Amino acid sequence: MSTPPLPRPVALVTGASRGIGRAIALRLAAAHDLILVARDADRLQEVARACEEAGAAVQRVPADVTDGLATAEALTGLHVDVLVNNAGVAVLTPFLEMTAEEWHRQVDVNVNALYHVTRAVLPGMVARGRGHVCIIGSTAGRNTFVGGTCYTGTKHFVMGFAESLMLEVRDAGVGVSVITPGSVATELFPAGTNTTWMLEPDNVAAAVAFAVTTPQHMLVHRLEVRPLSPKRPRSGT
Image (cartoon, rainbow, N blue to C red; front, top):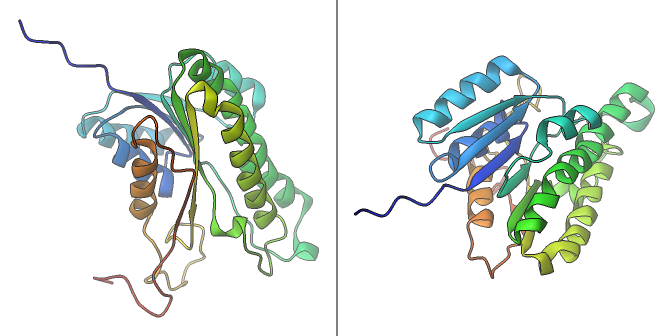
């Protein structure tokens, strides 16, 4: 009698409908079943189909992760082995030109949503004695630049949050990683920007896959990935 296959681990990815989140979902689909979360239901459906073609069972959760009550209702109690907190937004505008709406949007997505999603999923990991929380940060989490008063502030928060959470839950068998990419060629940059030298979303996805598939006793807590040089285009561009 053949031995039935072991169940695939389940990865939950936020901001999964485009850019880095889409790339992460597709990268993890080869070995994980997926829970994909994003506001754009149509684009989320397209990503889900692609992940299913790669072999994953997929659950779609169209949701705004800045809504704490809705997030808790949608995610609490789900079995999640790997959580990838990827949802993020950037408004790179000098402080005196930034509106209150732009400020609060960045804090809501980059900071508050990180709380809402992790708080819904983490108790199950702790109860099972294993799991992995992976957060997409940025090299802006240790650098500063003009126009980054809010964005870099949120990414500095990510670094402090991730390391503190890591210390809190490691004895329960849960790992916490933060991936800090440099510039990535996504829709973040306005039309006309030279992105030929930047990282591609799949480069970040590869770093995530590495961090969340290490042996149980091993933790990659911080992993920085950056373009080799702004003066050297990617091969083939």
